[in-house]
Length: 370
Image (tube, rainbow, N blue to C red):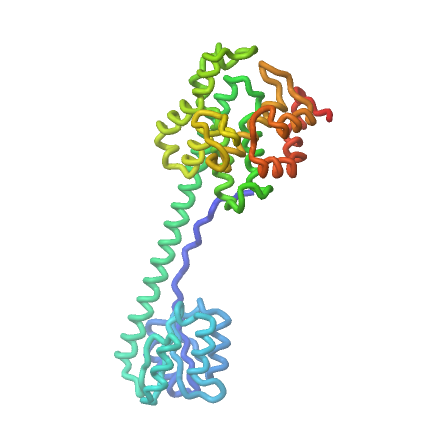
C-alpha cells in the first residue's frame, strides 16, 4: 500500500456569482453588471439562495444578498451561513435600500464583507465586489501554496527520519555482528523497550511518538562496544578487574561517539540515545556504572533498556554462557542475581513477559522449555 503523502490537486478558482433577490428587476440589473466578467446564477428568495449555497459553497466566488425578502430575509440567511462559518471562506455582500444602522451593524457582525445600497451605482458595485473576490482568491492561492510547501517539508522530514533510522540500524547491526550478541539482538531490544513503555504503567503516559524515538534510541545502547578490543569483547571466560574496567568504558565511549555524529545531534532520538548509552548499566540500588546513579536518578527509558538487555542476554547464547530456560530467566531477574531493578518495573515486566518470551520463538539456540 502506498502511504506517501499526495499533494492536493490544483484547484480552479470559482467564477460564479449568486444573486439572491426576490425582485426580478434588481436581479436583472445586477446580472448585467457582472455577466461580462462572471457567470451569474440567480435565486428568487432567501430559502432558494440558502439551499444553493449549502449545496456547494465552493461553486461560488461571491453572494449578493438582498435584505428584505419574503420567507427568509437576507439577515436570516446570513445567520445560518454564520453558523456554518461560511462568510469566512465565501464573500457575502448585503444589498439594501434601508439606511438602518442596526441592520448594517448586525450584517457586519455576521461576517458580511460589505453593504451595498440601492439604487446601485454599477461601476462602484463592480469595483468593490471584484476587489473582494480577488482578495479572497489571492488568500486561497496563498493557502494552497502554503499547504503544498507544508506537505513537501513533511515529506522531506519523513525521508530524513527514515534515512537517519536506517543509518542507526545499520550502525547497531554492525556493532552487534562484531560482538557476542545473538543475531537480532538490537531489534529485540527495540521491541522489548517499546512493549515495556507502551503496555505497562511503569513510565506513565508517554506519547506514542516519544516511545518510538526511545525504542529507536535503544538499539544504540551498546554502540560504545565498537571501541572494545576483541580480546575483551569476545573473551569466553571471566574478565579480570582490568578487563572489566575496559568493558565498562563502552558506556562513556558510546556517548562520545554519539556526540560526534552531527546528523544524530539534530535528531529527536539524540537525547534519549545519549542517556541510554551512558546509563543502561546503572542499577536501582546505586551499584551500577558509570555514574553510580540510584533509584529515580536513572531515567525510565534507561531502566527499561537495562532490563531489556539483561532479559535478552539471559535468554540467548553468549560466548560466556548457554541460553537459560524461561523460568530461570524470570527467577534470575526477579531475585536480583543480575542487577537490582525498580520494583514497579518488575511488576510491568511480569505483566507482559509472555509477549517478551514470544519474541524468541524463532531462535533455535534459545531454550524455550519452561
